[in-house]
View (spheres, protein in one colour):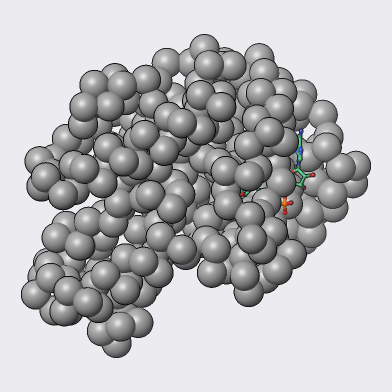
Length: 305
Ligand code: APR
C-alpha cells in the first residue's frame, strides 16, 4: 500500500484498529508495543487472515520504533484501560508518562505524521502529545466525538427500531462525564430526533451516551471498550488517508473557538490530508453553551492537576 499507519499499543484497541485498517485495505500497518512478542504475534496472526479476508495490506509487529519510521499517521492507544469503578481521569498519572515517552519516539521517526490520540483521559493525552511533539495543531487530533456520537446513534436506532445507517448525531465537549450530546443536531434521515422522541426519552439516551464507556467497563470487568473505539479511530484515519474531508466531532486544540482557549476539546472538524483542515463553529443555544463551558472547565481542572 502507498500509505503507512503505525498503531502504538497492541492491546484491545490497538489490535482491533490494526485489523480494521488492514481489512479496509487503507494502508500498511505497523503495530508497536512494549510487551515482547505481542505486536509481532498479533501482526502475524492478522497477516495470516489476509488470504481469507482478501486484502494486501502488509502488517508488521515490533517492539522497536524503527519500524514506524515514515508513517503517514500514528494512532496512539498505549496505556492502561479502566477497571470497574474507575473514571477515565483515574488513568492520568500512568498514561501521561506513557504518552510522553511514546510521542517522543514516534515523532522523531515520523516528523510529518498526523497523530490520532486514543488513550485516556483523552483530552489531556492530546495536550501531552501536542506539547511533546511540537507538531502544529492540525496534526494532533483526539478520538472522542466519533465514538460518543456512534454510541448515541446506536442508542437512537435501538430506541426507534430503525436502521443505524441514516442516523447522524453530534456530541461535543470533553471525552468524559461532561460530554455534550446535541439532540437538535441529531437526525434520522434528516429528521431531528426532537421530532421523533419525547424529551424524557432523549434525556435517557443522552445519559446512556455519557455513561457509554462505563456501561461497557461494568460488563467486561477486566478492561474497557475496544470495538467501537477502534472503528472510530479508523473512521478518522480513513478521512485523512483518502482526503475525504469528512466533518467529524474530534478533540481539537482550540484557540478561542467556542470561547475556549488553550485546551483540547471535542468540536466538529473537517478531516483531510492535512489533518484538521477546519474547525466548524456552530451557534449554540445558551443551554448548550453552558454545558460546553462546564465540560471545558472539567478538562482544564484535570489539565492543571
Ligand atoms: N509503549 C507501547 N505500548 C505500551 C506502553 C508503552 N510505553 N505502555 C503500555 N503499552 C501497551 C500495553 O502493553 C498494552 O498492550 O498498551 C496496550 C494497551 O492495551 P490494553 O491494555 O488492551 O488497553 P486498551 O483497551 O487497548 O486501551 C488502551 O485506549 O481507550 C483507551 O482508555 C483506554 O487508555 C486506554 C487505551
